[in-house]
Length: 343
Ligand code: NCD
Ligand code: ZN
Image (cartoon, rainbow, N blue to C red; front, side, top):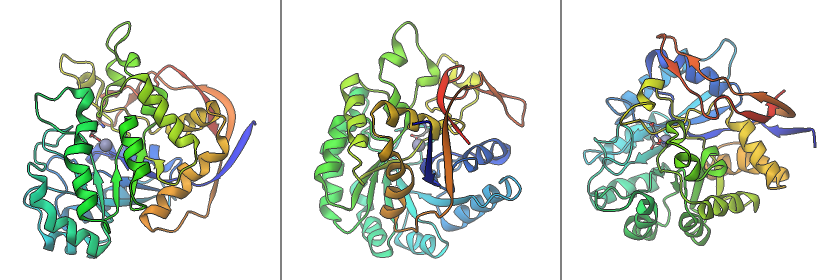
């Protein structure tokens, strides 16, 4: 096939950052996606309706002229989040709240230490129809980084979905066969996002032949058997899995460092790379469901009406991008060839 036309897709998990950086990140995403779930891990985090509304306005102001891109806002859960915060967020149009175990990833120090203490908040979210988005990794220092997702399922996720069967839960950026199995065997109220990097790469791409900081993200890339399980999951066309790029920019100097930041900035190539994966899997007919239908259906939002077309036309991702502040970002897949292009 040389061309594929899809309902315009949405990105169900990304990081836009703030201020000047929005002039880079918002157009990059609005290029292909109609909507995006915007992660709340700013400094300070987006912990209430007021902050979410103000952040939404800054994102809207950074859209390219004529763009109808729509940010979908989320709340950052902390141990201080109240039932009232959830009600106010719902009123302000916030669609979900994000659970980061404390210390799990970039800017998550303010996050949740005792998950059980948040159960009244989860009950209110179920009541209000707010989704719970989970970064599913335990953070105890003695737990091996490659086992953190699997252990989170056993220690917390099983309990959460058991206690709140009405709560819609998105297991974000899953990376293991354990997560695929958990989602597949859970109720219709449990789904997962999958990133391009976890479909395209495994931990060899991070470590063999030298450390590759631009492939470092969290949850960290796993062994190839897990990558294969993710690929198999999307190839089935199951509506429980949908597109979430986790596009997460960091300046080049912050990633190429003795203690490099986690995050892959994929917005300029993500949709095209997903198409590449689905083609490799001989499952291009499943791309539209994954990219454009399953997420909207799960969130209870209307599917988009516009169409976009991808053509088989190889191009090279630039080695770097210059930010409005003059700093550089090395995009995901920098210098490599992408097989599909937006028409
Ligand atoms: C994200 C970031 O940089 O904000 N990093 C990442 O590796 N995914 C945070 C996150 O989604 O965990
Ligand atoms: Zn993320």
